[in-house]
Length: 203
Image (cartoon, rainbow, N blue to C red; front, side):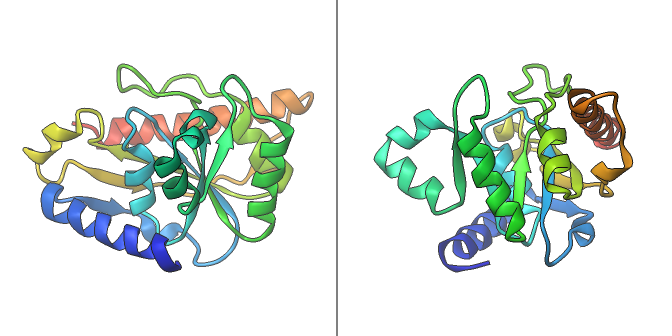
């Protein structure tokens, strides 16, 4: 890590441990070098932070373009590797930026569902995670973030706030009648893995 990112990661992880008893499970699965995708469930605006605290690597992530219209927020998220994305779909320019990050050995955080879950369950995924992983030939690490839905309640239940990291998924191991079917098959496999992690660690 470097500069501001390292400082933010260190301070926020320390605060999460002190205030919430935050824990990480499976962080040893993440390689110290090389490109990969971190694919997490999504129930709260806190998810990108809590998912990122579980990985000792700098992460890039997609953020809605509207956030970049606010100067202070724009300054902050750009320095923490946010990539602007248009609502309703990912543009070619965004995909080129993502490809550049992964080609350079960087790591990308994605939410396969494409939006926040209202009831806390893991819903049907969008094919985007499969498309990006397949096109760039990078592994996907499924992640389950627990305790961010109603995060203030996690203050009263120390240890509930946690990041669980699963075994990697290789997109090369999937097939499909066409690219769309291939991308969806990968995305479904990722969502199923995250769903099983939720079932195992929720409660």
